[in-house]
Image 1 (cartoon, rainbow, N blue to C red):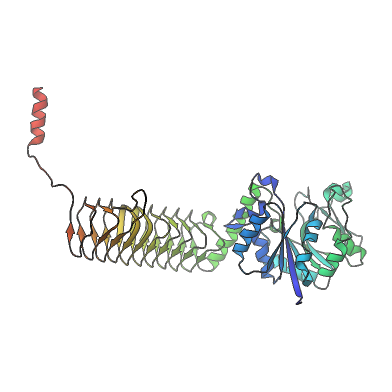
Image 2 (image 1 turned 180 degrees about the vertical axis):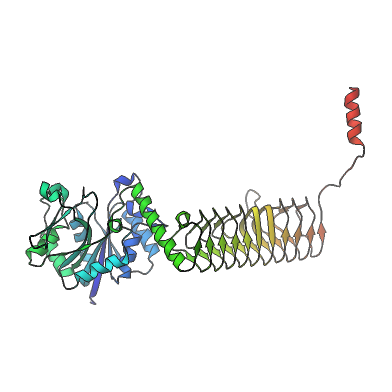
Length: 465
């Protein structure tokens, strides 16, 4: 059996009661990704193989979600049936790591802000040693395990607050809970740990005292408090998401993306934005969207699961859902592109236009107050204001087809299934129920009747009454 030199354990079994939610804490999202995604990504980036994820509450849902986000990754899921402490949670992962030796990285599923440089310092400090861990010095250490040092300054133990004496509680240096440990030392010493403590749990922190007893004190690597703080409630989740957004916005700006006010831009982790894109305030882009070079995304626009081509101008307060927009198109303001929309290059979609499952060819336009659903529209078409495709008869959805160069007058109803041929015209106010041949004119509105002098006669009649 091939032995793996570095593996990881991600502890993600906690229910997270302070979230006040029916959803497992590690499935709550920050920047479009569940909390547990972040430490798993870090572990994989460090070359850990396999990565054992210890789950508990809603374990099946957690597994399904994470597997979908890391297809093909060496993840192994372990269930901790009873919450008997961090040491017990790690014990549960032993069988899953039976083919791994060397080093084990232990991370928490609710710590999304840990950075690669800090993790690299931890791994470097652990080289050739039994144990290294991250410590921190928070302004208020209440609730954290204290790092207790001997007279020489070596780490002697970590004492949990409920087990700490008043003198130990006065210590400011605290355990951050993240470890890099030799696999042989981990499994050998963890078997010796008991639950004789104030909480009746198996503490992973007891490994630190074991290292000291073995004659080699664990190494504490100081980390910024903000990086290693866990997410325990909705307020902390929002704060973590804000910091992740700040980092992501900074990375995009350094890659050439312009942001007028980065504090108000909301980007998911999996979006791709090319250089010279400009994002105006209060823009949200998520669900794997792509924005091509030089595009401008107007204020208040929301883009999810969509591909926006180079040079596109999205005017303010437009909404894209699983749509494709070709190069140099202009969309908005106040436009809505629903799933299945595919706009070709240089298409214009204007204010209060809605599309759904509609393809529009190069240079076609629908500039005002229009609904286009289940439609195939050719190139260089003009769709007038107030036009709708009547695509649903109460039972079935049907398709409207427009050839190239079609002109649709304002206030037209296209009753699907119907086809308007190349170069045809449809007069304003027409209800189209039959196919229109290429080059033809279709008009179905009633003939106008004009009665001259009618207004004066009406006024005279009212006076005589």
